[in-house]
Length: 267
Image 1 (cartoon, rainbow, N blue to C red):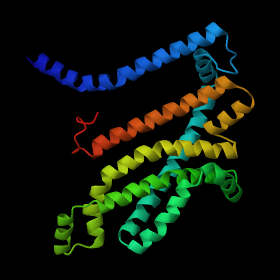
Image 2: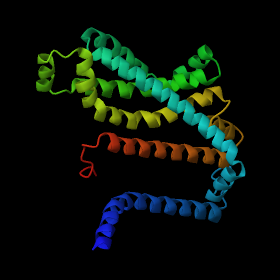
Image 3: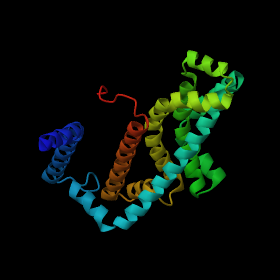
Image 4: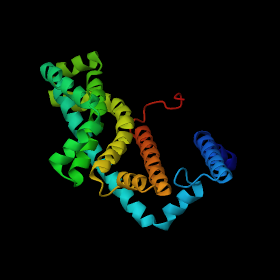
């Protein structure tokens, strides 16, 4: 009896996980297999499209080199995202309590968002130099707007009856923010994080193209200029893995923090 219950518990836990994980893994293996066959069958030069084996070989030839640059890109992306998130939440806090401030700040934030980052990146490098500062600042610029919009929406999406109850209890604005607005905004913030966290990696790579001294973006730039296509693909593969890992991590944290949300109905 116990064995049946134990088996049912693990099967209930594993089946949804396997249902989500196995199909994309099978598709990826199939695509890589077709890729390898086509490259070898048609004799495509490695500077045009390398075989999958060549890409893996490049990664294992100097794993420390790729690991160091991966850590650098991750650190830049994480730093820019944390700064953007903190600044956006602070701005949203100010804007939700002051309509004039909201009407003043929002158009400026929108202008920053719609301006192509590649257009202003050279200026940022000129102003801040070739160190880590321009990379983090560019990542900050590309990530802050989604968090700002969703934080502001979340802070405003409170139940009016509960808000009146807080007012009756003579709660301060800070108490209303922490105990009501902040709690309401958490699902909105995680929706923004799912957008901003992958964008932070893109921002870090774009910044590295203009500084060109370290990181996976720098590897891509140098490899492209020297027609080292296997190395270029290796860097792209690492960036894709970083993006997938960060997305899965965000989803995992969301399910742990927003434990009251029913995820079983989400397809």
